[in-house]
Image (cartoon, rainbow, N blue to C red; front, side, top):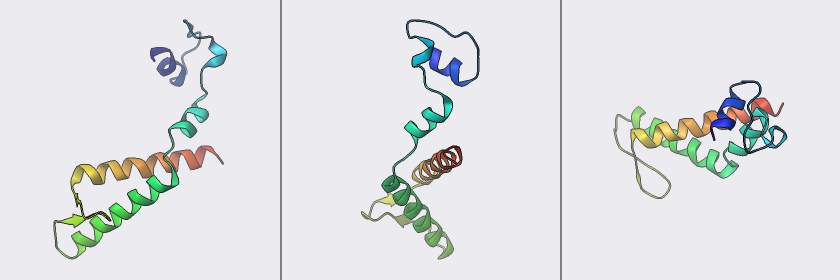
Length: 92
């Protein structure tokens, strides 16, 4: 793992038990870690429901399965969408 982190940060000459040729390039790593389309749709729906509740003056929002959306859920949804955006930018 340390080798991968060092490689992703651009350090040269990182070697170890894995050959240098087998490590991922950053763009490949981003693609592997990109959320799926269903995950992005769910995250966007969650944030939309949270925004609607806040606009109505309600502090309570429910997801499509009637589970309460809290701040941690909203932050997670934001991270999912951000990862999808980064993956889309690198694939261009």
